[in-house]
Structure formats: structure tokens, C-alpha cells
Length: 198
Image (cartoon, rainbow, N blue to C red; front, side):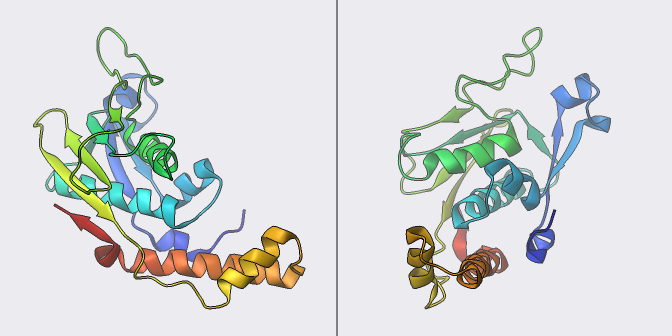
């Protein structure tokens, strides 16, 4: 499997999952997600998928400054409807990492490990992209993602149009993909510019 080298340079997200510990899936229940992991589950790499990953990375660092984040113990809220814009795409990435689900997740064992109702939409967030809340302490952080300062390459839009219309040569299709991922990489290198925590 071949993919852009910069995927390896994006910081991983480590969590502890009591369900994984209980069922013997991972030693001590420790799970580590990479950007490559979420790209594989999403099926593509784009500013939205990366943004969801980076929002989760920054939010969990803020919520657990001295401890490892607890998977399955984090409530995530969005202001949009699930079907609005890219909210569903972002939520899918965050679900894969945090375990938070709407009403379609793991229902628990003996009253423990329930992952349902930890993902909510149409909430009042005062302009934030998402809110992450620890179930134990009720501490919350609001996260905003805005990659607009990272500009597209000037020729990318014309190449995209040719690719969509089926008029691009094989070389142009490769060039479009390269330019697309170049912007994703630039966003990843400017995490403190595109992500705001409050």
C-alpha cells in the first residue's frame, strides 16, 4: 500500500479503552490511532478528514493534559444536523477515534461500556466546530477548525474540473492528486493556525 509520506509525520492519538481491556483486545486497553488509520476508514485524505483528526488530537490533549484520554468516555457535540455539510464525515472520523456514537453504538455489558448518546447534533456551540466533554469531570473544550488560510495551488481547480468531467490525461489526474495532498500536508503543518481551542 503506497500513500503520501507526510501521513507518517502527523502525530498519533493514544487512548485507553476499558472495553478493549475487558475483552482482551489490546494490552492495558491502550489504542493508538494514526492519520493513516482514519484515511483507510474514510477511504480518502482531504482537509475535512484531516480537520476531524486534528480537532480530536487537540481536544483530547486539552482535556487530558496529564493523563491518557479515555475512549468511550467522551461526549462530542456539533451544531449542524448530521446530514448537513460535512458534519457526518467529521463525526465518522471522531467516532472511530473516541468511540462516541449516536444510538447505533455498542450497548454495553452489565451496564458498562455503553457508547450510545455520546455523539450529538444540533447543539448550541457559539460558533465552535465541535465540543468535547469528559464524562467523568464534565470538563469541556470547544474546538474550531478553519483551514481557509491554507490556499489551493492556482492550477488545482482547473485540474479538478478536467478530472471530474473526464477530460484529464493520466498525468493531469496524478498531478491533481499530488496538489490536493500537498494542501492537506500544509494544513497538517499549520495545526496551530487552523485549530482554535477555547
